[in-house]
Amino acid sequence: MSEFPPASQPDPGFSVEPPVPENAPVAAPGLPIAGPAQSRGSSLVQAVLSGLGLLLAGLLAAGLLLMGLVGVARGGAAGANAVTFFSIGWVSLLVAMLQLPSLVLSMRRLAGKSSSQIPLRRTWLAATLALVLMVPLVAIGQLLAGRENNLSLLVLPPLQLEVVGLPIWWALETGRRGLNGGSAQRGWGVVSFGTLITMPVVLVVELVTMAVLGIVLLSFLSSKPGVLLQLQNLFRSMSTGGIDTDATTRLLEPYLRQPIFIFLVVVAGSAIMPLLEEAFKPLALWFLAGRKMTLSQGFTAGLISGAVFALLESLFSLSPAMGPDWAGVVVGRMGTGLLHVTCSGLVGLGLALAWRRERYFQLGGLYLLAVFLHGSWNAVSLLTGFSSLQDTVQSGPVAWLAKNGNLVLGGLVLVDLAVLLLVNAYLRRHAGDEDEAVVPPPPPAKVYDPFASMSPVV
Image (tube, helix red, strand yellow):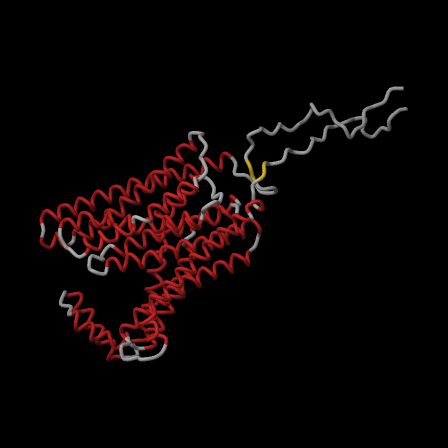
């Protein structure tokens, strides 16, 4: 007698599911993949954002640089303001140039071309070699900063871009060395978002916070009519242009020496501001939450966010520094750049842990660690600055920082670098735990078999 084929062995050539193509996108098991529509939508938004940023920042740079050249030609008071025009103009030009890679890569994606991965080995080697140039560049900058002439006005502002950007670039490449940080389009998209969205948002949030603290301080001073009257006279003199620097110093110095004032400033600078900045600096990552980034990708995106923030903050902090302290400010900003890169990388890693593995407590711990590192740096810097006003104090932490503040800051730089290297080593060692695997083919389709319920006939 004939025998029916077993129902558990359907014809492999018949299936209701389409075959999986050989170049199927990759994803971690159990995680969704961004579809073509989502990818095109994100690329379109990225192209529009970077294109507008390129246009606006380019126009602003052209206008400011032109005003600076006019000021140099006229001389006098207009020439004195030229340094501000040149400094902000070159920063605006840098912002415009940073939009170009994001615009090109997003347009390529919209045209159906793939985006390559971020190169790692060559970029780290190039950043390390470029870091050697810091010594001659800082020497040249210090020489120019001590001379208020046309050569200094024309050369120092673009030179500041290099002395600020090179250490930050090295910190970024050191942190992401050997890691699969994702596509170049995503990386440059984070750069574009950081320059155009994150930095303005952080500035607005900090200004609002400072305004609230100012209102609280004024409410406190309202109970002291004598002090409030002196401040009103000071503000009135400032508004009429009759400000006397020596008189202002004599008026404010007694209050700057007060422990309660020092305490409030240190709390605001080492607690409130780090809490806000470390929460908002990786703002671009929140728009990638649905992509379920790997830990290396989250860490890398955080590093890029911190690098962009450090670059702009340092450039605007350095712009007015045309005196003999220029080199000291540059060296100090090198430590600040490493701090921002490390702290934002920690928060980016925490966000990836939360979104990919639902490790929300680890996100909280990494965020608090970033706030602690940031707050420690700010606290030491502020107390070291206040120590110059405490010349009558011979003991205590403020007096001790007057002698050892720079040494403590140097130690904090080593701590930040150690944290950066340890996290990088951990992610490289556990890269296999988060490797993206090819989506497994779907199980065989269930085909309707009218004879499935019948027993074989013998």
